[in-house]
Length: 264
Ligand SMILES: [Mn+2]
Image (cartoon, rainbow, N blue to C red; front, side, top):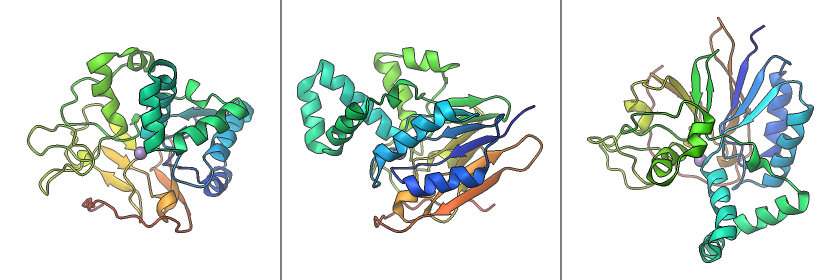
């Protein structure tokens, strides 16, 4: 029996809506539960979310997959820098004190969630590619496996890591643009994406009112930590995709980049 694929958007430390959402999704043993990344930071209880997901994993009868977001990537870099480049780690910690706080909590709980998270997830049954951010227009190849992605080094690794952060891309070259660097004519990546690596399910860019559907991509971060909600996309063979959302209380005012909503 082919189970359903449930994909949950950016949790960002919002434990209550996550528990509620998992409960009402009524996940069956043949199903899979995938997180689109950024389970940590910003919100009130990163450690609680990690504990919950860690405990869910061995105890759940279904498979649990954690895809890395830019916040997991940042923590991973921090941990690596602590070992290899302590000066760089100290600079990172000065800019973002939450890194060291969370590292300490993780260490005291003996938790290693970054040891099993993956850079992306491809599901051939339901024909989707899950990445945290997006696909720059300049990306010509996508790793065939998680092992291949994890083995990338140097410039190739840097190029791949854009999938954690991509929002807007250059109108002409299709290149990744850093946060705030885009002009009025530069598209949101999913508006320009031609489906070359399959249908992409992504988070990272909060769409507060409802998930965003593009020709070859679906954005499911509905801004749980920004006063929107936490959303799951459920894919079931032969059925139309469904969205399930838990509204969250406003606690961080947030200004969205103007992302035009395609009519659907
Ligand atoms: Mn993100």
